[in-house]
Image (cartoon, rainbow, N blue to C red; front, side):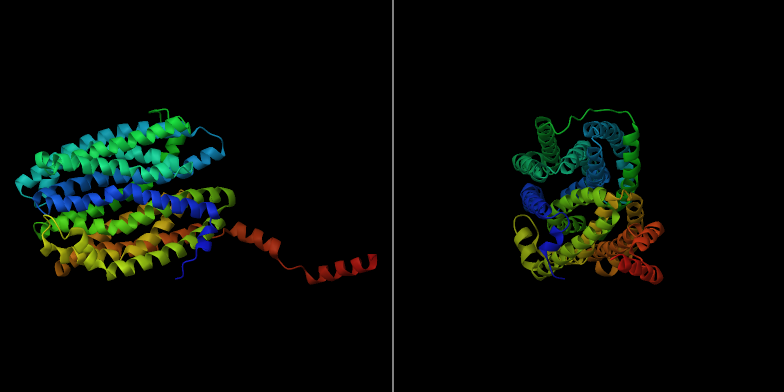
Length: 471
């Protein structure tokens, strides 16, 4: 598959390429600190029951926040784009989302904390000390739930205004804060310093985003708890994808839970391999996917479904070709990369081959994952989130089945293979559904045929003779 920058520039011309390149560069710089955090954790804490407790509890926070944050950040873009095209007040919608989500997340936090200890004691096979540590870390990390979601609301709003730079670079404030906090307090707080550092870092990031919106006077968010018609429609659209992401986000928790059955350190090995996998995924997702959603939304409201389908096709060519190149080189160089990243400090070098094998198994699903992400953006633009919900529910069920079947012969690598197989299924499903949604309707086909039908021969001869006589 040949890469052609001209094909993707056709989506919006040069502005799309410029926005994509600049956003990718800034996002890479912004996320650099966050992406490096697991590697510092590996060097400072190694593989232990303490890291198992942190990664498991932090996975619960990421699962809960990801249900809301990822959905809102995407779904809010077409809504704000539509509001701006109608000269409506975008600040009213943003403030309403902030208010309603804050109350809902506070209630969810209480429920999660109340159910955490008895549920974890049943689902996991942690010893008593590890289980107690996991609960304490969960309690310390819970403020992240609201902070991450609120930051995503502001990020999505800024992206809708094509202010990509600050949302892209803002994670650097969180990353630097987390690393500094861990470095200063790792000796006294241990793994608890990681949880506290994440809370402090996300709070700083949220403050920076809010400050720039306020100073730039893009809009004035007015916090409101009223369920207005606009917020009802937004919640209805977002709810399907939230349910889907809840199911999809369950997969990493299922993976970690089933990995805990495989012995001490298994959860940490899976997590470290996932961090390596997320490096290329975050590189593409944080740049190209962000700008594509905004440009797709604009062009859809300007030209309709046919233009959206054409834009998606061009994006698939770019993303598919780039993903194949990335996977080829990462698999080829997986050994040196794993040794470079983890082969130092307190990390047990005997674990390195296992991390590398799990990483390769995850990379097998990278291309379908990225291609599926393009079609997911198309469904979001169409506000067709019901399809995304169904895809995620099917993936969750398949993940449990494939995990159980593959973890017996392949150990932790089987769990990674299960994830890759689920990405293949998801890509095929969203592709078929998108083509179905963008197919011409019967009325459109008839209208097009009416204008493009060849002239009647008899009528053509009559008109031609009359014109000749008049001349």
